[in-house]
Length: 346
Image (cartoon, rainbow, N blue to C red; front, top):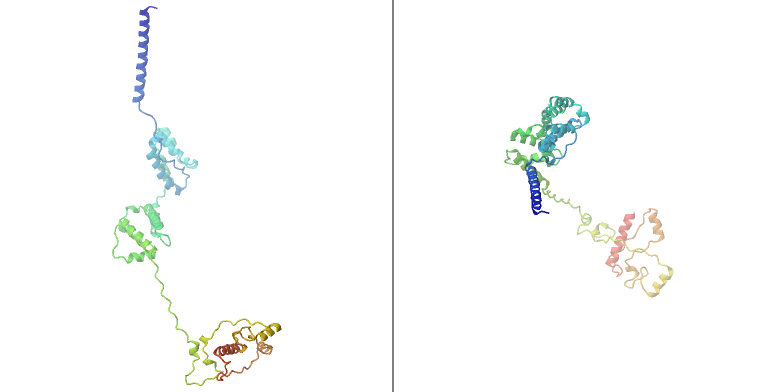
């Protein structure tokens, strides 16, 4: 092949490649300079559909206004915003704004505010401010905690348009409905702030102080005058003559009132063993004899039958003036106990 023809073909190819490169550069420049059409992502969630209840309209209206104000660019143009508000209505409520929809399509003026105005005329309460002010004057703290009362008061104050009131009027309305305990604590203060926010701060401090105040110590109980001791009631003059049968000379406080040991009935073999061993015939102890035994003797069958029948039994008082060794102090106490027990049974 002729070299001249080869050079001509190469030149033709280079020219076509340069043309393609220039076209691609022009497309890239057009794409880089073209305005973007992507919409921003919405920031707020979609409000719930309005169901036609008046007490839901007060919360739905601010929510739909916030959605349009914040995510208006994400929703689109005025037509998209109009149909978005229309879509956030229940089917029964959509029938109320059908005239606004027909007028917007006829005049091609898409304003969602016309829908909101129609709903406000249907569901808004023109006496809301006056009724809220009346509820504000009737509100009471009662037994509610202070934070709960402040929240209820602030809401009623907002609905009554009380945020535009002077601080003195706000403080007077707030103080009037407080509980009696906090009112008394406020009355004890020498100076109170005149600004509403600072006044609330003082009330919160007083309420917290009353909640964590230490309880007053209870006064110690004053013991009643002790009654006269039994020994004092039965006291005898020092020059009085001692009578063995006179129970008034007995010091009851010194008497051992512990229950006596159990009375055990001995069998004949046991009694014979005690007799042969030389021990106490009542308890079997080697420390004392029968007359000094601390265990009380079993009453005889005759005395038991007499005591159970309710008859009076005469007991001869022992003579403590005798010098017998058997009359020890311990046996004397035992006789006193037996005598008191006999007196109680009689």
